[in-house]
Length: 223
Image (cartoon, rainbow, N blue to C red; front, side):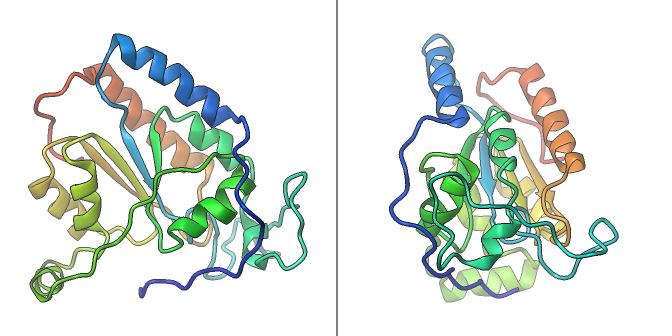
């Protein structure tokens, strides 16, 4: 699928307010003073995982549920697709224990519009480099997604989770061959967005990772 366009401006400047995620990161930073191993990264797409699309499934036979803007956020001129984002996903993502990173074509707009909706602070953003002819040829040959190489480069060997609606077996194979750390490439059904089942899968994998200890060294291949 081609890169999706940017949303219309929905809100003003992002609010740097205390949140569950901010408290979580503060606690993790204290913990990392005792254990310097980095947190796993969680690369998060917007369209599909957070904004369901493509036609309601059996879970939503009467159409997608919609949500009101968070308190203090005007709804005048709001991108109507944001109303599909469940604000309750923010605390659940914060509770994963990962360093959250936007991995979306929304780029900085994710911090301006989506993060406040979810009650999250400004997050790091993956900026997508221009693809060389050589990279494009390799991508066409292997069938990997255009995001895969930049995400592996950004992870730089750290364990990571990638949550997206366009992940395929070609991406898992490429990551297993080119990434030295553990990785979970988790595909979300874009018709439903993130569900309890998805969070259970993430928790199971992260629990297994924690059981091995985040102490560096070699990690098994991508599951």
